[in-house]
Each structure stands twice: as C-alpha cells, then as structure tokens.
Image (cartoon, rainbow, N blue to C red):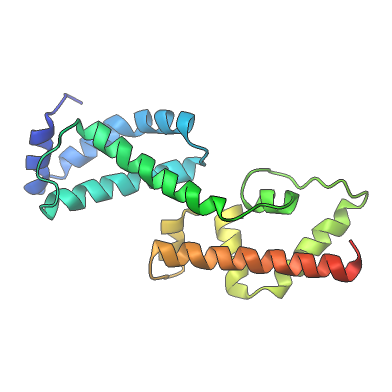
Amino acid sequence: MNTIKSSEILEKLRLRKFEVLEQIDDHYRSVFMRWAAKRFSATPNDLEDAWQEALVIFYEKVTNGELTELHCAAQTWLFATAGNYLRNMNRKMRRVIWHDEVDKVLAGKNNTVEFSDPEPEGKRKLLLSAMEKISEKCRELLRARYFDGFSIPEMMQNFQMGSENSTSAQLSKCMAGLREHIQKLQKDHGA
C-alpha cells in the first residue's frame, strides 16, 4: 500500500470510497496481529474481533463527522482503538475466575482436561451431568464460544442477541450456572 496521508484517508472515507478501508485492512491487519499477539493475552479470534471493531469504529466516526482530523497516523489510531477493545475484553474476563481444569478447557486455555483424580472419567461425567442441568440455550452458548471458538459478535448474530454486552452477560451467567451445578454435584457425590 502506498502511504496515504491521514487527511486523504479521512476525505476518501467521507466520500464513501471503501477501497481505502480495504487497503488499510489489507496492509495493517497482519502487522496489528503480530503487534497485539505480543502485548495481549488473547486468542486469534479475539485479535481479529478487536481489529474489525477498530475498523468499524474508525469508519463510523469518520462518516458520522465525529472524527474530522487525526493527530496521529491512521495505523496508530486503529491500533490504539483495537488495543482498548482488547483491554476492556480482558478486564471483563478477569471478573470470571477460572477455578479448575474444566474451566480452563471451557475458556480455551487447555485442549485437554487433566485431573489429579485417579478417575478422570468421573470428572468428565460430572461435567456432562452439569451440562445437562443448564438450559439448552446455555449449552449452545457455551459450546459455541468455548468449543467452536465463536467470537462475541458472531454469537450475537447467530443467536440473535441484542448487543455484544448482553451476549457477554448471558455467557457469564451460563458459565456461573455451570460452575454452580458442578460444585453442587461434587458436593452431592463427595468429590
């Protein structure tokens, strides 16, 4: 991509010349992914979500007249916006405390479940029993996010939810419900 001045980028976007947005995306996406992967604890899907969110915000602010001039390079503005998105996402995720290996699997931190219990099959059955106790909608949401790797925006669209915040909130409630059922089952079975 030939370097385009920030003022030219803004002017082209105001005129709805989308090719400039595509050029920015093509040129800076991989640079952003490398930059963000070094700085944030996030999945590739989360990095992609952050980048797309930054592009959408940039486009909307320019076309709505909220962003009329840049005091930095467009790349810098986009990276900062995407970085803020990732920080906010990480802040939300820190509210959820992962207690055991099952939670780590659901959060995508591990690919396998390992238990110190001599009967890991018992823990697997416990998880499956707890999954049966939560609502079908919660099962679908948890599977989509933690096993299928759907992003929050993808889930919002696929499950026809009102906003990303309501999608995240529902996901958190489902995870809390699953944890509650696991703890209850462990208590009932003396695990």
